[in-house]
Image 1 (spheres, rainbow, N blue to C red):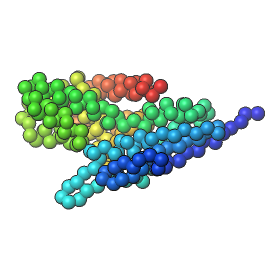
Image 2: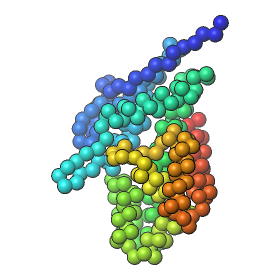
Image 3: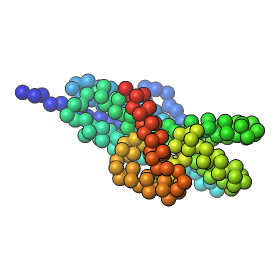
Image 4: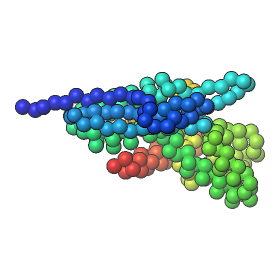
Length: 238
């Protein structure tokens, strides 16, 4: 007789740790608990870490706002339910940890750092070391996609076009991923997870976006770059 076990989980504030600032407010870190076969694992919420970053909080004209803890918990629950349902026949806590580490990742976030590095080298090569350093350091506190969009208004067209076009060959595919995500999500929950990406509907919508906004760049090249990042994330999760 085959014995079956129920998977259970909960998100909770880990009051055994010190409080941390979440966009100006003190709170205990958000953790996740998963139980299966009388064993339990505990780990920090990926989305709590992600949406705690300064760029997810905006203050404009005296008004300020950012993601709520409730929004983050909802996103965690959707991901965890997805992983459990996907792996029920062969479920184990070790497998869950690997799947969580992979499917939770925000593709915009993981490609952003490499794009910042690309811009740093680009402006260094253009003989603009101070701008290069300003972009490298300041972009960590702002949404990089928005920084590049401001550059379109500030730079002459040849310089801006070169910055963007070269990025498809020397940088991660951050620009098309973020631009697409921004059109499909609402502030402040701006992310594009691996879980969402692997939905065929999302891939089809992304293809339409690329063909509309980057007609001079082959869709296959961008898709190949995204797939390389997915391979990298999968290896990291093992």
